[in-house]
Image 1 (tube, rainbow, N blue to C red):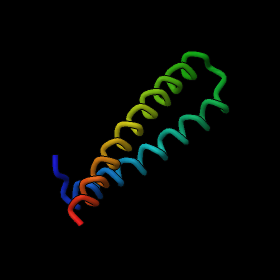
Image 2: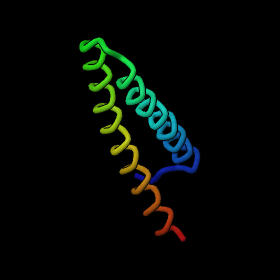
Image 3: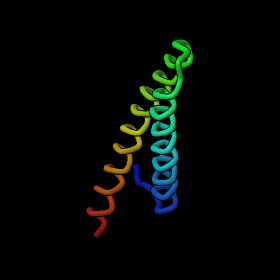
Image 4: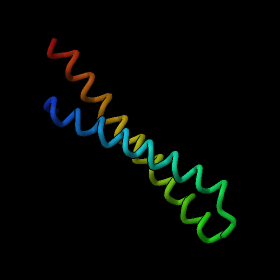
Length: 70
């Protein structure tokens, strides 16, 4: 799949947002004493980490395509 510049920028924006989300969840885990809430936050950290890996893969593919074009 060929990605447009605007799509690559959107993925960058999503990645930045998700990085902030995972940082916030990890920080909040240290401040919370309720085990149920800690478990929810851990699930969020795990899911967000996987999503960031997937977004990174998309960016790597897009970067490879940009190099081939040039």
